[in-house]
Length: 132
Image 1 (spheres, helix red, strand yellow):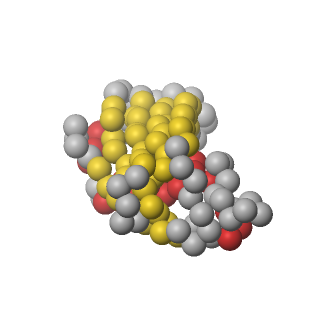
Image 2 (cartoon, helix red, strand yellow):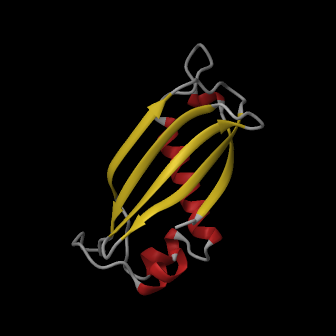
Image 3 (tube, helix red, strand yellow):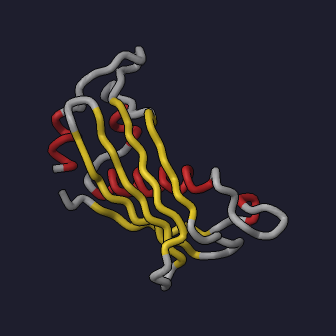
C-alpha cells in the first residue's frame, strides 16, 4: 500500500512555549493537516464525506517525540495510509524540519467510520477506491 503525501507547516508562535519549542499537542493538529491533504490529493475532502453521512473520528493515536520543533521552523509532515478495512482506516506520520533528514516525531492515528448518529458504518466504496 503506497498512498502517501507530504504537507508543509510553519510552526506558529501560538504553538510554542516560552522557550520557542512547539507544544506536543500541536503535533496531532499537524497530523490532521497531513491526513486531510492526503485525502484531498486522492480527490476526497472531509466535507464531502460528511455530506455523504460519514465521519471519521480518531479512535486511537500514538506519538513519539525525538527532537523539538521550534518557532518559525518549516516542517514536513509525511503521511502514509497503512491500513483500511470495512470500518477502519489508519495512518502513520513522520515530522521533519524541512531540508533535514532528522526525524523530529513519528505518530499514528486510527479512525472508525460512523454515521451522523454516531453508529459504526462501513467505509463508503468511493473512499475505499480512492485510497486503494
